[in-house]
Structures are given as structure tokens and as C-alpha cells.
Image 1 (cartoon, rainbow, N blue to C red):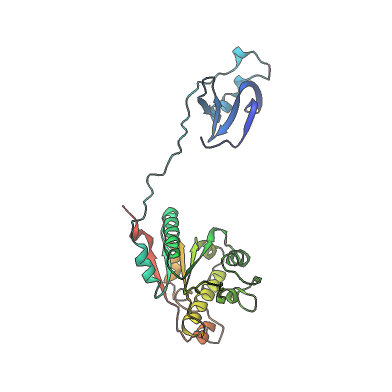
Image 2 (image 1 turned 135 degrees about the vertical axis):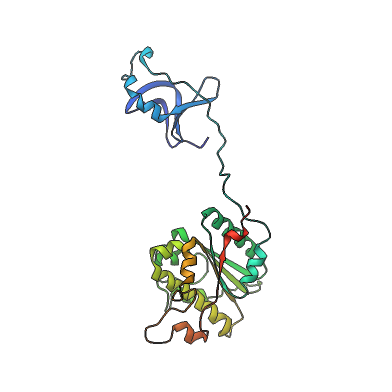
Length: 288
């Protein structure tokens, strides 16, 4: 049984009144559930009890006047969603190959498909040599503070100020490359952002700024930096609104963030005209 929210010993509540019982009562999925003398579980819907609460008297009322519901057995097995499609096998390597050349925007209508895709891809990438995988749980990213909260729990480094640029900002931490004695430095770093559309809906401008920062750091590390090569790739996973944003030539999946009358900052730094993204419909690897 899915366990009780409330358990009351020796008391059962009926529509605001109280009746004595000899059993331990539970509330379970809208049922009044109790264990009978032979050890089995029985119960009836609370709504049925409350709708007939006028049949109950105060505590101590004669047992003959009390409503005695017909008992039935409650199954202990949890129901499963049988209509949710799953992903096919052996698609992860193809997606990883796409990441060699660009970042990825992966979208689907069904949340279950999005979760399967992101989790499976994270596990696959995590098994590759010289690879780091940073996972952002976008359901909890609604502003700059919550983004920084997750970023500083993915990448080791100094204190992270709640800003994107400047000393101590998110860009500074994204550029960091931790090293450990006896370990070969990573060559690939993947950011997998679950439910990225949550921030896009909550604050589209902040979302654009963060996308611009991640993409800019990736281009800088790949084309400008004199340090050992570290390939950054971000996989944004979410609903169809991500694909709509990706169609917008002014969005940061297709262009650098404007910098007033000047050239975009990351265009100046990297010499790259525009970031590179691939839009990917997760449904294409869903089983039918």
C-alpha cells in the first residue's frame, strides 16, 4: 500500500465526528483503510463515509445505530503508466557524435520521454574517458541565484558570486578546470540541463544570458585559449517551447547576445560569428 499520510490509533474520524474502533485506521489514496482480525486490509472511500456522516452519533452511541460499511480488500500493488512510450536502444552514440560539432537542444511533448533521454545520455557520456558530466535540475532553476546554486555544486572552485560576468561570476567558474594529482585532465565537459524550459518561461532574458555565457566559454576554450583543450557542450532538454526559441534568429541558440551598439562580446572574444546548435526531437528515438 502507498503509505498513509495520517495514522490514528484507536480513533477513526467521520465527517468531523469521532467514533471508537478497535483497529488502527489509515488514510490511503482517499480510502479509510484498516486491518481486520484475519490480518487482511479492508477499506472504503472517505467520501462515502463523509456523505453518510449523519448516520453517526457522538462517541458512545449504540453500536446498532452506527453505519457499518461493507469491507473490501485493497490491492497493495502500485499501478503503472502503460501508455507512456519508452526510448529505443543504441541512440546515445549517435547523439554523442552530434555533440562533437555543436550544442544540443532536445525537446519532446512528454515529460517522461525528456527524463529518459536526459538520464540515459548522462549515464552514457559519463562512461566515456576523460569526461565530466554536470547535471542541472531545471525544475529548481528560476532565477540567477538558483542557477548559481546548482553550478557551484557541479564544479569545484572558489566562492561563486550571484552574477554572470566579472570576477567571481558564473563565467569565471565555467572557465575553471580542476586538476587532481594522478588524474589525467578532462578533455570533455558536458552540461545536461533538465527542464531548461522552466527558466525560459520564468525569465527569458536571464535564460538568454546564461545560454550566451555557456556557449561563449565553450567557443573561447575551443578556439582561443592557450590551455589544454577542453570541449564544453551543453544539452538543453525541455518542452516544445525550446524548439520555438531555437527557431528565433534573435535567440541565443542562433546568435550571440547583443551588446548595445557594439559587436557582441563573445563574437569579439572568439571571432566566431554565431554559436552552433542542433535541434533534436526526442520523439525520433521513441518506441511506438
